[in-house]
Length: 214
Image (cartoon, rainbow, N blue to C red):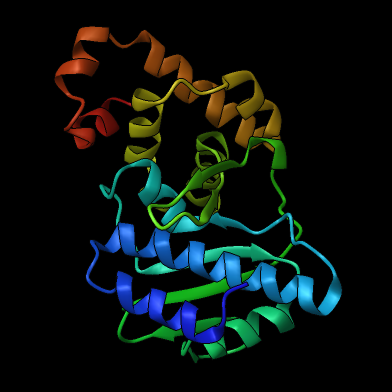
């Protein structure tokens, strides 16, 4: 069992890492400490601790998309507040914390995880901790909703995910909550499929051109 000093020393160790690597290791450290506290206080393991939002997209796009915010789904708010305080994060408001030396912001959202938990991906960090992140399909759906309901310019990220990963399109469409989301997703993949494969390969790094085509 690690002590508070062990965890703070680990945070010091990862300060010099590249931002994405640093964020992943910080999530792993927080996850381990949070689960330790859940077990101590409640004899409970939070199975729904999952990274979502911008960091999940940054992870799958290998930092093409960049964010300083870490969004995490949890179920035990009080324990997370305690953990972040002990790790020297500064509380900004009810759900937001910031660590100046790490230059990372944490927002935790009350779970359970709204997506298909079976699709959550789990990885081991270089330090041996667990990193849980939502799947490419769930990120795709999240970005579709951002486009439809918040008018964001996220189509290039949909294209990049669709080109770089073999997604379960049947699951993706079925996971959409409204007919508007289903129609947009189905239309998106139909248009992408109709484009010439050689055109996709030649433009794989120029997503703005594909955005115009889509």
